[in-house]
Amino acid sequence: MSSIEDKLKGATNKVVGKIKEEVGRVTNDEQLEGEGVVQNLKGEAQTAKGDVKDTVKKGIDRI
Image 1: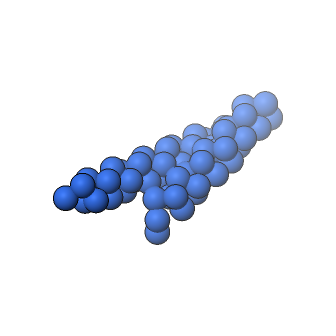
Image 2: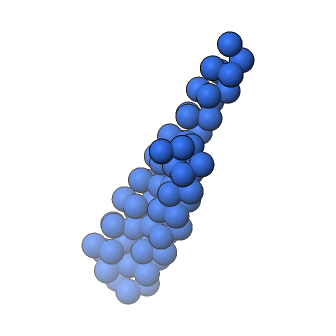
C-alpha cells in the first residue's frame, strides 16, 4: 500500500471515528462513542504510517 493510500484511509477513519464518537455522545451510546474513539486512533496510526513511508522514501531517494 502506498503512502497516499495509507493517508487517505487514515483520514477516512478519523472522520468516521469522529462522527461515531459525536453520535454516541449525543445519543448517550457509550459503545458507539468508544468505537468512534478507537476508529479515530486507527486513522491517526494509518496517517502516521503514511508519513513514515514518505520520510523513508525521501531518505532513500537522497542516497
